[in-house]
Length: 382
Image 1 (spheres, one colour):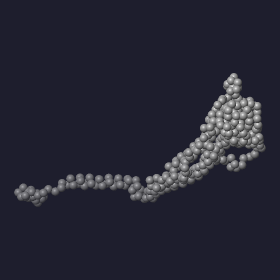
Image 2 (cartoon, rainbow, N blue to C red):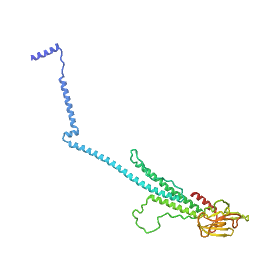
Image 3 (cartoon, helix red, strand yellow):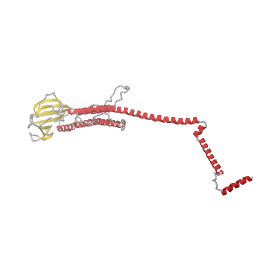
Image 4 (cartoon, one colour):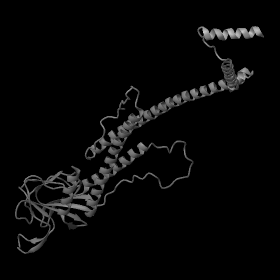
C-alpha cells in the first residue's frame, strides 16, 4: 500500500513539477458512445428484418415475392397485348372505312352515269341544261404523313354525290314545273292534256310470295326512275302543244288588221261580229298550219272565198279564209308550220289578208287567246 501511495505521489509530484501530459477519453464517455452505437445498429437491423419483401426472403418466403413480381409482369403483358389489339382494331377500322369509301365511289359513278343520261334526255326534250359535276373521279386526299385521309376523302365523295343528286332534282323540278305550266295554259283554253300514268303499283293480280331480293331496288335507280317519269310527263305535255293551235299561221311581212268580236263592217259601215283575226299581207304570202292535224276541208265557203280547214283533236278546227291558192288537199297530214295555202282576197274581202279562225263544235273562239298562250309557252320552252 505504501508503494502505491508513493507512486501516486510521485506522479502527482511529477505533474506538478514537470510538464503536464494530454488527457485521454473519459471512460464514461467512451462507454456511453459505444452503447449508443450498439443500440442504433440494433434498431437498423430490426427495421431491416421487418421490411416485408426482404423479411419474406430472409424468412424463406422468396417464392411468394417472385410470384408477386411475375403477376405484375403478367399484368404488364396483358396491357401490352391490349394496346396491340387496339392498334389492330384501328387498322381494321381503316380497312372498313376504305371499303365503305370504295362502295361510295361506285355509287357515285353509277349516279354520275345516270345523271349524264338524264341530262342528255332533258336536252333532247328542250329543257335547259342542268349543271352537274364534270367528273366523278375519286379525289386523292392525304394527311401530312402521306397516309390516306379517309375522312376527308369520304366527305369529298359525299359532297359530289350531293351535287349529282341536286342535278337530278334540278332536272325533275324543271320538267315538273314546265309540265304544270303547259297543262295549266292549255286547260284554260279547254284543251285536255293526256299525261302518262307513272304509278306502277298495279291494280290487281294474284297474291304471291315475294321473290328473294326482288324488292331490293337501288335508291339511286328509284331516283332516276322518278326523274325519267317527270321527263316522260313533260314530253307528253310538250307533244300536246303540237296539236294545240297556238302557233302563228303566218310569218314575214304582215300586220294584224282586225280583231275578234264586234267591229265596224267594212262593207255596210254598221256593227257586226267578226269571228276571227285578220292579218294583212301581200298576196301569195304562205299560210301555215297553226298546229299538227289533218286537212278536213279544201274549197269555197260563202263569204269566206277559198278556204282550208284543219282538224287538230280536242274538237278544235282552224279555218284559213280569203285565200288565193291551195297548197294542201283533204286528208293530208300536216305539222306545225306546214304551208297549206296562200294569202289572197277572195270572198267578202276588201284587200289581201288572211282570215284565221279557231272553232270548237262549229262555234268560233277568240284566236288571240290561243296565240297569246303559244307565245308564253314558246318563250318558256326556248
